[in-house]
Length: 404
Image 1 (cartoon, rainbow, N blue to C red):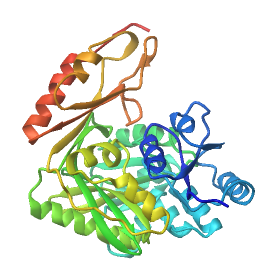
Image 2 (cartoon, rainbow, N blue to C red):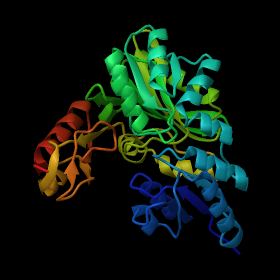
Image 3 (cartoon, rainbow, N blue to C red):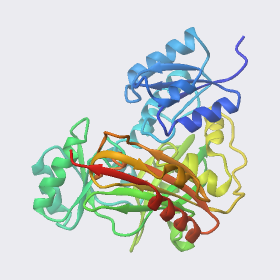
Image 4 (tube, rainbow, N blue to C red):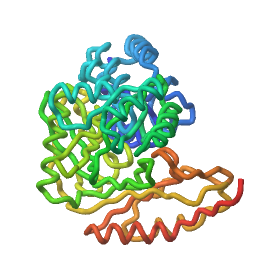
């Protein structure tokens, strides 16, 4: 007779490792899926299934086989990666807690998301669907020939996302987006001016719990590269409340009534607007690292509880610290030396240094969030303290690059 509950985690990369570890700490039997046999979470999980997180039909087939032949699955979830449609399909197929597949699709495809938000009068930019360059140019004219953003409708991590201000920019941005879309579908939308917030939420039977608000640090135009984030946010409370109000309205419009939601919310001169909303907890080291370090709240444990059909608990903030994640971006070229890691890790307040490169790897100028060389995570008593710690760690870590 199966005694311990079994949780299926879709994805076993670095950002899913914390939830796999947490499930095991909670006494769960874990099974993780990933297409890469070297994914770090596979070595940590009790069982593993080698399959892409994007393979919805295959994931449902393998989950059903595992559920029928090996162990009863009690819950399914992901964190930090856009596998919400796969999670929903598995949950729907096995009768597990989760959201409807159609709502997961609306929270994953940017065109469907914008359409749903507009239908429910949730503030967001005007947009258009582009399959061809002519489509993009036509929409640019329709939107008033002001600054616009072009992006793949079906990718994540700011892949293929850039700003355009004129027809020459449209041509370049459309080609950049087209290269990054699996389906060929591109969305064009009005550029939103103003700072951006990253907001997490847990949702249990329609009850929405806001679990973290961070300032996103976006740089390197015309691309949108997140060079880090810091939490809690430093924006005035009224602006944060407006952003949360819009985020909550978006969650409801998208039908996210069980699980988690992550919002990128722009605070524009005319009010908050939805950048994007995903039906999962955030990546970028926020939900698993910076928020728990800042607040003392265990989001991973609560995401697992909700996936099992249990209410969250212990969501009251306990610490009141400031935490920050900062990208490591060395000059482009081939890595010939890496120095200062131990020095950085020895600094007061530095919790982690994650490197994405090694000697011999090629570093590029990042145009998305998946092309950064590494990340530093630090905690301070104040915002200024956290920034000082990050600056010291950035100075200590030296990634030397040379010609290709």
